[in-house]
Length: 132
Image (cartoon, rainbow, N blue to C red):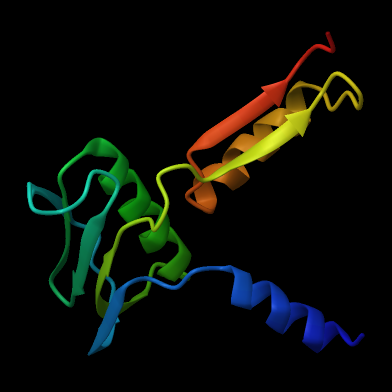
C-alpha cells in the first residue's frame, strides 16, 4: 500500500465542516470577537474570517473553543483565508480510550494526547487506570 493511499484513507476519516464558503482574500486580522447565538447547537460554531476581523458565534464555550481550534488550523504565518465556516459535531461522544494499566504512558505522553484531542475536537477521554 502506497503512502498516498494511506494518506487519502486517513483524510476520508476526518469529517469536513458542514458548510464552508470561501469569500476571497487573505486576512491578517488579529481581532477576534465572540457572539452568543442560541440557535447554534451546544458544541457547534460559526466562524467568519474577513479582511477587517474575525467573528466567532456559538451558544456555549465548547463551540467557541472548537472555532478557535479551526482558526488555528487555518492560520499560517499570521495569515488566514477569508472564509465562513459553520460546523457542529455529528456525534455527542467523540473520544479516545487509553489503557494505562497495561501500557504505562506517563504524564508527558498524556499531555500530548490531551493536546491532540483538543486539536481534533474530541471531547471524551476514557482513561483506564486499573484492572479489576
